[in-house]
Amino acid sequence: MDDRIFSMDGWLVPGRHEVEMDDIFEEFAPASDNRRVEIWKALEILRSVCNEYFEGGVLLLAGSFVSRAAGPVFLPTIAIVPENQSDLTNWSDAMEERFMGFLSLHDIIVGALGPTYVPVLHPLSGCIEVLYCEPQDADQLVLWMGTVTMSSGEDIVGARGVLEVAW
Image 1 (cartoon, rainbow, N blue to C red):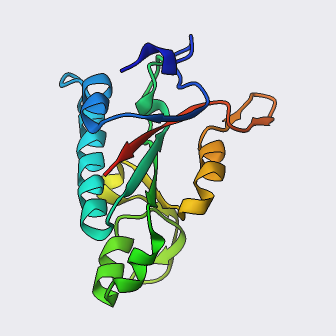
Image 2: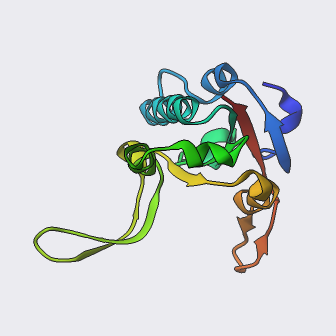
């Protein structure tokens, strides 16, 4: 992976950086790190699902998983951005329901024995956070995904970059 896309502290420089899946595997999923391998496997499954449901598009990835920064690896945020959102209009109800199972669900109430509030449920064993993004909103989402919150509480929008992987 090109060293120029990383800042001195190991985070991606602002912007979108096109890479191949093999690049992500080689850089961020060493066999010695089970957590990173789990995230990698979830990413592979998600990409396969996207390939099945959309004619084409990109996954945008952000977070500590796609950085060289020291420290723990938290679940990455991944945005699904199809080339053509009209693909959705051809889905059956069953297809839409299956696809929704691959998105992170926020502020939900579950439970057969009484309501339980869950702030967020992440797909694929909780390894990744997944969002759907319409193509025209992708640039704005990249800025949000790259936001850094300082210790003072100030948000610096777009301070970090994201990886872009086509399917």
